[in-house]
Length: 110
Length: 119
Image (cartoon, rainbow over all chains, first blue to last red; front, side, top):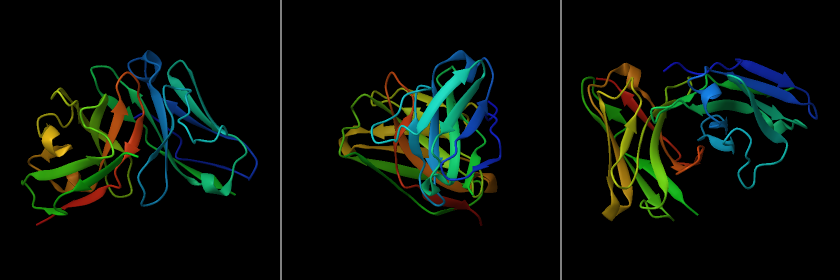
């Protein structure tokens, strides 16, 4: 069970779009439409932003969107805002009733 | 509104057993959710530990399975984590969280509790 691979950091200016990739294998990301994304501020618990690859929980702005192609899932943040500066983690079901998280990405708003 | 709250000792000795409890309020632990434990070592990423359903069904991270036990107490609306033979590598913030049956996505989290393994 290896962690999913995410870029260490991404950055963008306010109003721009940024994308965060989450690369796994056919045994996890590529094998199921069960990818979720979390935002985490320092010292706080993670918050669910996207689930089942593309679905947004109630209350999450539509600036956040998810997609998947093959073994790579992507989180896109459009219209970047200062409050989006945080760590982001992906998660995937990996079969055998288990889950695996990504390595995490720090988003910086320039 | 559902709330999850972790509790337990903040310091555990090496080779000892880490024990934490997550109290669920605002929802029944017998509802259609899987109840999970996730941890995060200081400055590092998230790691899924395992989950339990109210009937007692459990699933564990294969890398921790030999040391982990998750149990549920429906009368107290809470579930618990036990991690045995701990080392400094088990020092982390431990979170409890829930997943709705039939979907994925940890939609509610506790605030987390730091457990330090040290003599």
